[in-house]
Amino acid sequence: MDKEFYCYQCKSGLLPGHNYATIVKIAWRVFKSAAAQTKRRPYIRSAYFRGEKIFLDNFWPHLNQKNPRDRWRRLHYFKCALELVRNSRQRPIFEQRDGRGHEALYRFLGQAAERLFIVQIKEDLKRRQKFLMSMFEYSEK
Image (spheres, rainbow, N blue to C red):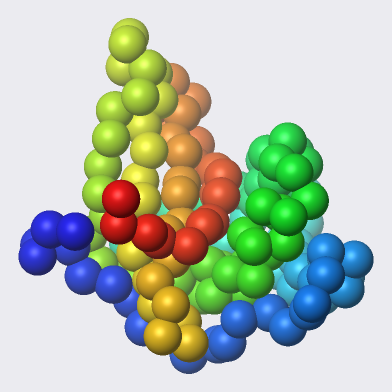
């Protein structure tokens, strides 16, 4: 990883659970508490994007495309990912996705319980909306 990218140190820990059924219940509670603070579409405000809304409604359909073992690994970081998006002012890794320039990806690096993880936010450049898409453990390959 480049030295110009720094990771955000999370204060909250990883979600506990030894199987997918237990961890998804905890993750849903965390999600519902974040969603209860909004009136319509669930969102959180991001410090890096100067308080812009990061919508959470695309996260669950994206997660359900993965296999159960991968979902379980990703959900461990859910609470940390929400904290990182809310509080981090660290510069993310930026990537233009669509050939026509309609989509951008931001990858924030975080650390929780001595583990590095990445939070991925997708921006629809046409509608100027940002969505929390995924979080996963960082592995240097």
